[in-house]
Length: 151
Image (cartoon, rainbow, N blue to C red; front, side):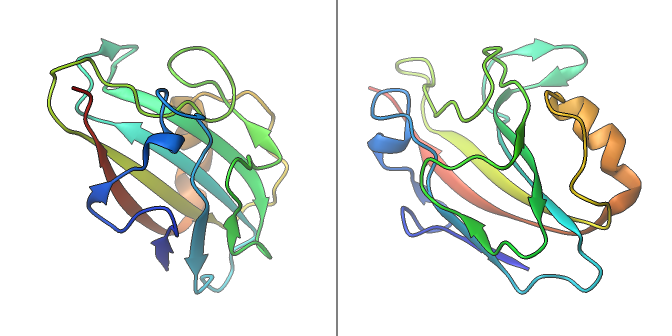
């Protein structure tokens, strides 16, 4: 399964409109081919460069969305899946890049998980809770890497 975005290429900068300094809308994502046996998808965005350590994790969670049906081959710009969990700011839905000024480039991993479970997980799961719940159901995964740096 390959993950792409019309907003940026793998390893390249994320446009400002998809950051906390812009419209803060999630970039459109596409994925495929869908792995055989997939019944749902989850999409995550994580910044491991953020100088934050909490709840046994590191970095910063920017997006947790799931219960996306297996018929989906992507998400449109600004679209969440049917269920969302909180970002590390505590808000549901997408929260775009906003690294500290002068901190250098941060790396944002947009991960798509193909799952063998039905799209009926409870809403509001944190990244940790989601991964703990679907651990045995992950049948495919890939990511798209974007970068962002503030002056």
